[in-house]
Image (cartoon, rainbow, N blue to C red; front, top):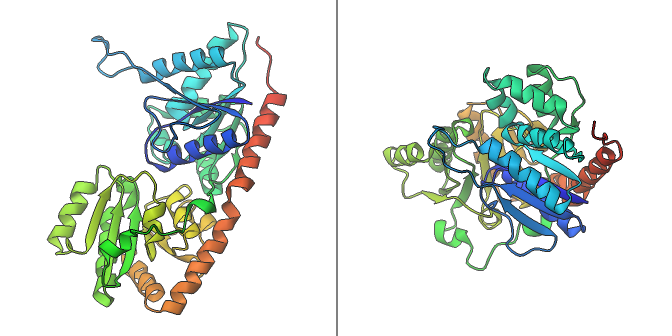
Amino acid sequence: MRIGIILYPTFGGSGVVATEIGHELAKLGHQVHFISYKRPARLEYFAANIQFHQVNVADYPLFEFAPYETALTGRIIDVTLKYNLDLIHAHYAIPHASAALMAREILKTKGRYIPVITTLHGTDITMVGRDAALEPSVTYAINSSDAVTAVSQSLKNDTLRNFQITRGIQVIYNFIDPSLYGIPSPDCLKNQVAPNGEKVLVHVSNFRKVKRIPDVIDIFARVREAMPAKLIMGGDGPERSDAERKVKEMGLENDVTFLGSIKNSADVLACSDLLLLPSETESFGVSALEAMVSGVPVVASNAGGMPEVQENGVTGYMCDVGDIESMAVKAIYILSDPERLQRFREGARMKATEFTTDKIIRQYEDLYQQVLDSAKEPA
């Protein structure tokens, strides 16, 4: 198949998942064409069966904001015609699915029908889509796509509850390649951050309010009172400066390391003992799955799709959103006994095998074929 993938190029979960889907499809022999305004963070520069097509947005004085969606539509049309794409896989309802649907309608006038598959990742439903000004566009994008997937049952339920959806939505979970995780590098970060054998807690995210970054720091402070510990903060975003200020005010600057954006979290997780993920909501929890496959237990909130990924008492623990006391207690319980920590490590690795690459990519391939088999002819 010749597949166009529209995605955000950032380090966030949706961009990582969309990029990895493309990588895996390319390994299976499919021709994959990534379309975005910048090269995706995890996209390899030289890989067989993969091409990247940049969307260039002209700066017109008439517009206060550059019309990205219109430029994206034009780029989709160009790539579809030049490379004879079979289908478009849009990650996020807007602007990606809406632009793909406009491209589909324009291509119909040229005698081409390009099916559009939309994957919902979370923010497009739980935050953006609830904006009254955007809700009609999100609803239209979902209802008009040739197929729609959601990365968790929780996200599917949210979509059906908050929008007037008239079509089916298939749940296809995010996935992980176990071979890429769990192997510490010779210059393991733990040797630098925790040279005296302190326990290493880690948080990886895009530092938005929904991630509840202050809770991460408060939980860590309580763990540090109970045992020698260090905290690694991986990622970047709007909440980082406030987080750094809070760490300094609490006198924790010698125990907390901010790494900034990290291209690949595998090296960091391989040197960690526990992941903290106290988010307001998580549609799936990619960072939790990456931790689990690395043998790192997770203490998280029980919001969104986390109960579909985590198993209480086996991979770690889930607590109510904002219950930092309980999260700290669970973290201390896991970390305070080496044998107990090892059991949680093994439980996390075992649970992660339910979300391996081969199981999930096969579901996408099957969906693509179903859509192609039932694709409509141009009007």
